[in-house]
Length: 154
Image 1: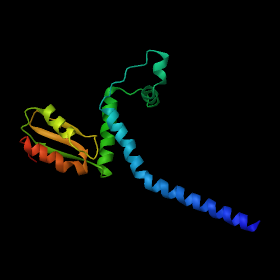
Image 2: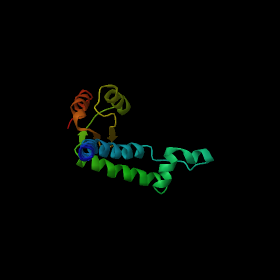
Image 3: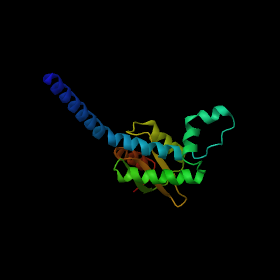
């Protein structure tokens, strides 16, 4: 009987250790995915109130209600906060460039057409000729090559 309990205790300890290791290994990717989701959702901030009963059962509506039915402005601000968290975590970066890009939509299509480590990236073109890029850190080498080919500079 003693051998049974020793093996069982050893199994429980091994299971607990494996669970702890799994949580530690998966924590950062899950943490990043959590913030990425908020950023992605903030890019289409308008949510229409549900009209039919079936609309109340959609995941987007449930999440919108749980968050307190935020307005489009509140969604944008929340997304910006989650962008900052991703930058602080070192996963994403935000860089500014000066550009003379005549066709911004063609530029963005060119960037998105190629290989990216993370498809979640955003470009903010300002009237003063500045371009703000929010993207995964490892994607900036490729994005900067494309910016150079379109006549931009850091």
